[in-house]
Length: 308
Image (tube, rainbow, N blue to C red):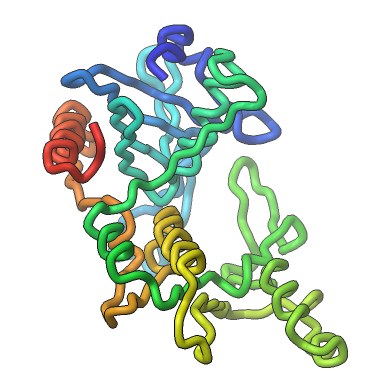
């Protein structure tokens, strides 16, 4: 990663377009070495994007919505930044602090683009995967007691919003006729239900064409058949391996039950810790934050939670 950034020192060489119009971008905005670790930020922005504002007038009978363009700084146009991600790299370890607008998956995609398409440091047949490190204590619990069952959850439906949902373009501000979310059943879930139900009963559900006002959740359980009095070692290892591999899933979508009766939450599968990002005048204090990330990674290595 350091070699890629040395090759692409200017921001213009690191801008990754993320829309067809090439007006929205992802980029490693800045980076530095802190105590031997590479620290930096990934930003998203869209050229020409405006920010919604209102007139804060408590005496008014209604609040009017307007749009504000970002000001210039000298002769250089500024842009609004909806998403920021902070990272610190040490050897093969990566600590990430992400926001709802810019998640770790976006960093993974951007690094693959930078290392493969822009610098050639990765060949076409080489992949790049950011995988959560499992907590050593949780991993040891699973290996010692073994997993009895795994519960996996996901939304039944996805958003049905599309180009024909009544959007009207006004200048650069897009306004929708309705703020009510609509949902369509997820194709993977539909196929699962289709494989279980008789064809005539599935057809009556009309899931392929239906649109709903609310969402549901689907939970799938992986467990040993209740009639089995003992389990072969290979299936014991398989369900343990599946459980540990689920550390990359959303914390709320995984729950494990161990053979000793204890439970493991999704948050117990991965190494994480709440962090505080201090800001002055709304501007993040990056140097202090980088040092906090570096100190945290160092403590994980010293305590044997990750390999050095």
